[in-house]
Length: 381
Ligand code: UD1
Image (cartoon, rainbow, N blue to C red; front, side, top):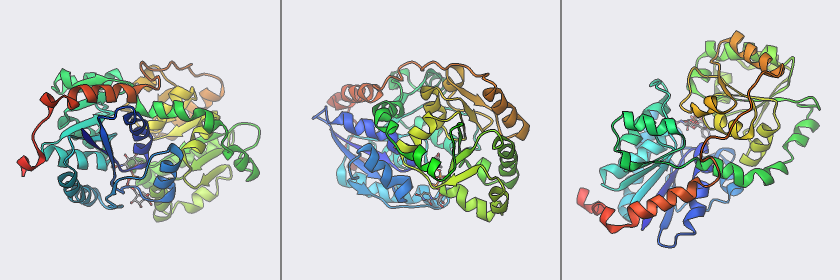
């Protein structure tokens, strides 16, 4: 059985790594890896392949950056001939980026089974491009693997057949568990000390890249106002996403940022360094989805700079607080954490490092079985 596995953007790489490793224990499965090229920089892509031991992709579609419509369309146009060439039994997509829906849609139209890993998450905020990608991908998937119970409930509320839905835990946490020991040896903290970004009194970490936060100068400024206060208590390490860096220039925020002496902008860093950085932080500020989950497992307080989350288990059981982008609310949440007012997290069910194993077992049972196979690709043409 041949499965095409798709990656495109940075958060996909951590999710695909344990699956590619797990396939090695299943000789009846022939896994192919397609990189759409949605992310392409050394620091946004290549470094992750190296650190996570992911093999070279069989195909790189090299689509690069563009508007949503153009990027999605380019991926679709480039992916269709790959499916026609390789005739896979299934296409596996992860997460909620444009590559996820683009490749899922091409596969569904060619009557190739679609497997969605990290299905069912819902922010119920359709202004987020990722929410559109999630809803659409789930609606055309044949097997849906959920990281948390809310995902199962959301899918059932949308009328998706229960037989297709599996709660399996989280492949991204598989990767975290596998890499924690080696990440502890990262020298990132020494480097930051040598650059005088941090001292012995703790630090915080910031990541910011959502369009809602970094495309709107008012929202971005409100967050900077909060950081101005916070940096008096703790230095802030800010590995900066290329989209955010571009916007700092285009929104004329460079002077404003340069005035914040303890806000340290650094280049995007690799997986192992980031794991070390967040695991030793006093607090993490983020608008990322995955970091809300990683901080829960690492038991590091997390302040989410968004009005909602599609990952409610991180609030119910984890360290996550959904604080939004109001200056006073961010500062207040931070002060409370500094005073020691935060909850011990519990690890969500099945976040035990074995999600990839469960997923591949289900795939084997449901797709390798010839009775479950759909039609030949050519039939759809
Ligand atoms: C994408 C995902 C988002 C995910 C994020 C992780 C969608 C809709 N969004 O957002 O869900 O959280 O990745 O990073 O799929 N750029 C580079 N080098 C790169 C990649 C991007 O310089 O390797 C710059 C380009 O200027 C580009 C911009 O970043 O225009 C945005 O990249 P894009 O892939 O469109 O979206 P992200 O904001 O990264």
